[in-house]
Image (cartoon, rainbow, N blue to C red):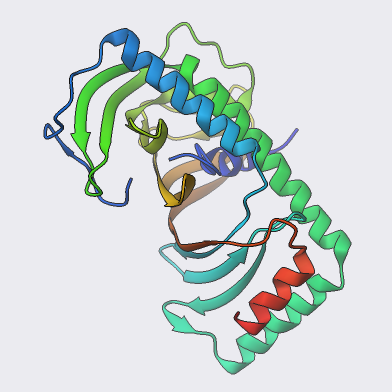
Length: 287
């Protein structure tokens, strides 16, 4: 059995890889739309999460992008390219500064070693595939794990219609496993692009402690929160643009504090048939 920390890492990748605004907040109350009925509102939630589930299964549209990750101790920037054999990354900056000559050489050596080790890349892809399966499970669970209250329409800064919901745990939902147990403790807000029927933001916070294996393996503390933003980055191509996570997790006798802010920008399509060694060469050359 994996440790709860692994479950949290996977769960946080599109509530953990493929969820959740446009990058600025939508202004509520300014949409010129008829309000949705309760049935229409629930139907939109169901269709949006069905679309997210389909997107999580689609690996035929790889992208290149820049990932910036900030924690209280370190900020890094990485160029990432997705391939059929898994994503590869090149560290390009730390704490807002380009790598010095020593760190740049070390990064090139790491990429060279990866290019010569298909087994290492295979293990990385296997881990990513497990994450993707976790994401898919969460996406399929969300519509029945929560009760959604429709809050009305708004207009996002990009002019698109946004539908806002509040959500709380469904008292009739029984989590089938440890991965989905955290959903029983979360409340928050959900934003959906009404035209594209895609989730653009989900923001949740833990209203009570969440125990793993009755607290024997670990516990997520009350008050932790997660915000995931998603946007259309190309023609009908949606990707996560920001993940903010702050949670305290106790694993056995150790406490782990998650305090990260990740932004993903500069999305650009790459060839669907690209292999990971070709991606490494692209990252090395900067092209």
